[in-house]
Length: 98
Image (cartoon, rainbow, N blue to C red; front, side, top):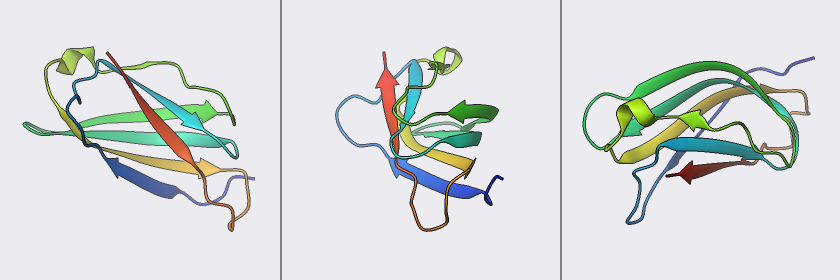
């Protein structure tokens, strides 16, 4: 049974934030990614409604951002649901690929 929707987000910092692909990795339990919102330094955010299942210890397929090339990513927000308990937080790592 899926638990209610959770939300998470991260602000990116550093010299390089121009990525063509994003990958996600969940460490401690499986989840279903329902929505991904990528905010940029300039221009509107890009919304990716998804229905993607992530298993612990595995990377997602590369999510393409090529149509938005040349824009610096400022923030990544996601909405998800999970199979686990309420008291175990989900740990998601966002990987940027050039």
